[in-house]
Length: 141
Image 1 (cartoon, rainbow, N blue to C red):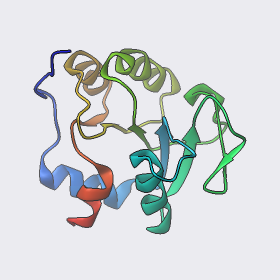
Image 2: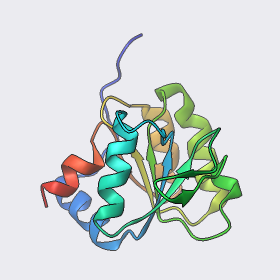
Image 3: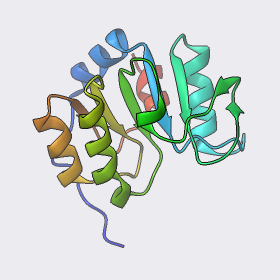
Image 4: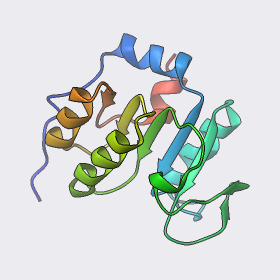
């Protein structure tokens, strides 16, 4: 697999602003396995005052929160998606974010880059972060 270099990305100052304005974060690919990065990051975000919304194909609750199967299933406003999925999945995720209309931040975790999906999200008015960990970036502010 060839890795992409992110050509669409927010600056450090924009990332700081994201954490000041975001309240509700859908975590796509949030594993119930405590040893997985997605679980550790979501737990950290929750402990730091953010409402997390798990999106996962199984489970009823993760980290004490109701699990949804897709972004479309969430019946309340979501400010940001934090994506723990393969880069190829980002095109469909960008489309789902655009369809919802309330998502302001499209965040692809460390090691995840899809410039085509990022451009689509950016063109729809979302802030885009690729190849950065939300936990690491939040700790840095």
